[in-house]
Length: 267
Image (cartoon, rainbow, N blue to C red; front, side):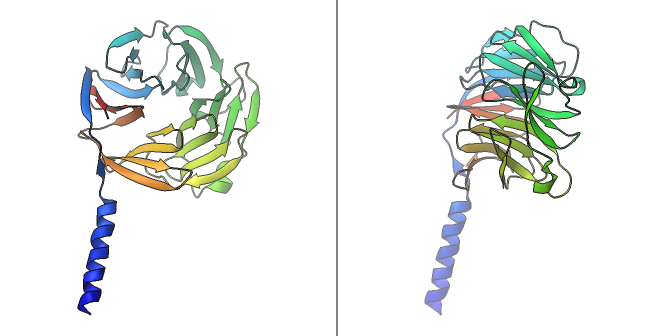
């Protein structure tokens, strides 16, 4: 009986040790003083910051300002997709419109989603072939829209894959899969032809970054890394989570949006 109790205690301690968040050796790089509402990053480590007044600024991976939006557009910026560093997609949800910028934040064109037949876009993402993925709340469908305005792919209504209401605020195409982030139901995974594959059980957050086979997200003030191909999750302690609003991560950099700063850390 005593041996059994010892073994149970030992097993519990081992389990608890696996559940404890791991620590990365984060090193502070820079802090950008700004009253921002959202951030985004590209694969080169460039940081895109949208202020409360909808000014879009571009910073290098060490926090140096290298560009400012030089095209005046009336409306609230809802999302910035910089997965292609040479073409930045800027989403204006209230206008149902996407604006395309070059790597210097100069205007290259725009797409009126209403004219393309999208009723109510809630999120957008650049597609692997440089078109635009859109989630349409009007008919609960993932759609790929060409820059010329034609709808090329549709998923069909996602209600068959979810329970209750949908709350989709983020999309990502990693050149192999399309991730529809629903903060209520989880992350719905589709192939590049908009065919449903499965739902990843990550709920309660719309702040997700997809890098290769990993989904990074913040939950309970920790950085979580979910391997979607192996269904494994790892948890890491972030260096500073007081007032944390949003997070992004790229190779060797973590970006934390706080109420009056964006902090950059190397790891």
